Length: 571
Image (tube, helix red, strand yellow):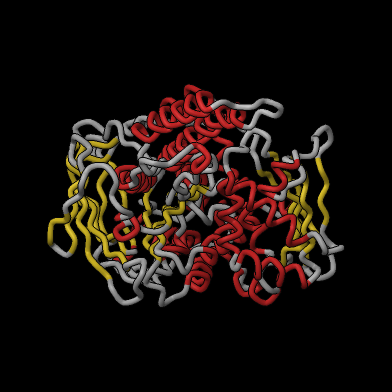
């Protein structure tokens, strides 16, 4: 995935009538720099909103309602075909003011029929769009939340159908009651009428039934599967599930991903709590949890505990899903090397296991406030959308422990910098083989200066330096990041006098530039010592040069500014 440019016609917050071009950039990482409020995060938001809308438009099971008024977008990007390692096409995708999408592939118009699009999104969209913010940037996660609600709506339609068809099937299977032909005919008609109701409104989920089919033929009809949203936002809960999945990897693989910079460099154990009592309509989720429990059942190092007051499932339910309890705790001890082998044989990769757990977490949006969900169903909603701080979830990490080979520590007890580096590198490694677009808002905020100087190389190593499938946009205030990138990969943001945002490529070469030069050139600082100290120096100068020189020698630490002032005052 390579985003080449985004052209905006109209206004989105502080962005207006401009083209943001990245086609001269080289490598995986592009940095957005600038002062606070200069618009870096707004462009990340707009990129996320644009691709989020494209997914909703192209997916037949998602819905589009109202694109941003008086706003049109053109995206140009290269994308590697999902079924080919060699075929790469250049796409120009336009979203006009009415929300209509026009697509060109290698300069040729592609006809997009209304209704089902036969999976064309697999061809033209990134397979993954990953969002992350180290702060409380609720605006960035908004686009991701919109598609989460779309996924929830689809699953709720399936739940409604399950409940409705269950009533009909219960009448048919009622014990001790002999059904007449008239009763059977009535049930057949009710089933088909109910199914036709859903099939007409949700054709992407409900396949057309054969004309001569009977109720017995379709009692266990399989609805079309629902894929996860391509947009995935990594908050604290999501990151914990991802790290739990990383325990599948060997010790050497985990240490290689984390670059040997962490003292605690291996996942020791994880305890997951699941509760599917409200989500029995998601057969995939039930089967995934059952599979996880079953594959670990014979491991003495791992164990399952049913939650109190949770009864065993019925015999019929167990026969269908092989799941004894709809709620419980699963503890996985990765110190037993056999666990890694068993999980790999069942789930293949950490990405597969993570996404099976993640699909459960998405269903937790059912507990969000009704007003929040209503707002997020509107494509043009652009304000902050707040998720509850403490929210219920069908899947939750109760404990995640890391080890250095001798001692263990809870992930929550790591320093912010240690946790952040593990999160970012694990995300990069998990999705490095996907056609992925990363949108990272200040991902190195908590790192110490030493780690910041290496952050660029850490990420490149985790994603693969020669990886042409991945592209990473990073908003940052770090001169360390800027000094690691060529100028064509560094984009400076400023606000003009009228409040609009301007973006331009860094004017001077940034690769290898000293930090003081980067700070003065790109962050508008004239001096590298504190402004309050400069104000105090000016006050001392009012009392004469000799007094000021003596004060400077006695009070200031070493700096180029101190040497310059003393030399100047000594002349």
